[in-house]
Image (cartoon, rainbow, N blue to C red; front, side, top):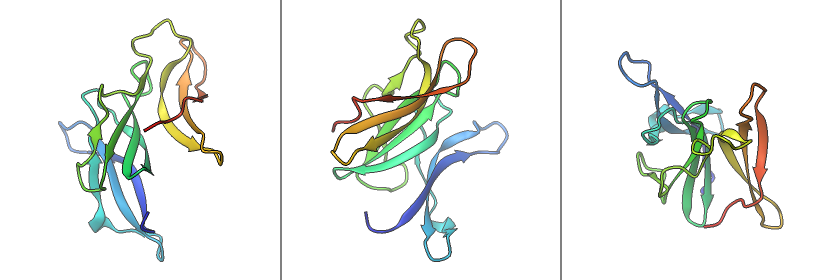
Length: 153
């Protein structure tokens, strides 16, 4: 919203005895040189107890920054978490009530499983859609789905 550009990415911790998925990092991009500004790097969010947080998407909607991220790995515990903040300061994002906004972990009989890695799409008419990856409960490749319920604040 102020013209600055950022890279939002999963943080990987290579240290022994540490969980390798170490949260979501935001780093400003110099638009003239197309190089990252390492001094601006900061961890925005570490995820929930489910862990394995990654695949972030960051949006600014109605004065809040919303961070959508996948967590739980790409198995049947795969799910989508959303956190929000009024700033892009380190560790300022709070997880949505209930921790998870989308999961099929509690519905093993559902035809759609492993749902996560989602993104919001807004149409020119102001309609919101939510698109995500998923898989069927049998052995086949992953699929993409969209949800017309989309988004409301």
